[in-house]
Image 1 (tube, helix red, strand yellow):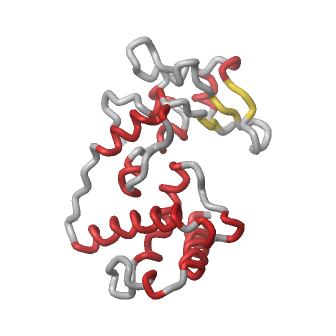
Image 2: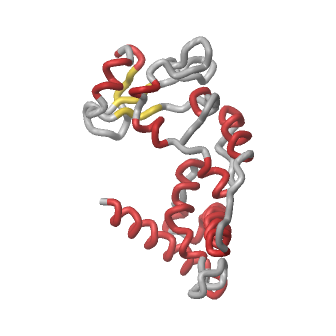
Length: 192
């Protein structure tokens, strides 16, 4: 993703996960800026942020000082997920990301493309508005995770005809929630 001149995610109070195999990255970051990553095996670390929410690897001009060997988390980050799911990036500290994401415009070469985008948005809306329909009410509370789940499961909101809404409209909320859980598991299994 070409971020040309945008440092919104770099100045939005994100902890950046760095895996032990990212040796080039780890070699460029002072050890005192790293902490053990909670919930991960030994060797996984996080890079925090300063009191202004900025990544300590930004130089005085707002450019990444380790760009050529930045962490995989940074390489993979894509603010378009918020625009695709039509959700905000988070609280006040993520306002710049939300503003940037809202400027994205999507092209729809085919009707199917437009329908799939509408299905992503329908998935995000359903998940947010129907938490009680999921086992234990467990839904992603983090906007990034919610947007990613919506991208994984959007097909639940496409009917047999490929149009948005027709299948989900005939099911109970619990059936739709179960289909979302299953689609997410299948997506994750397919990536393994």
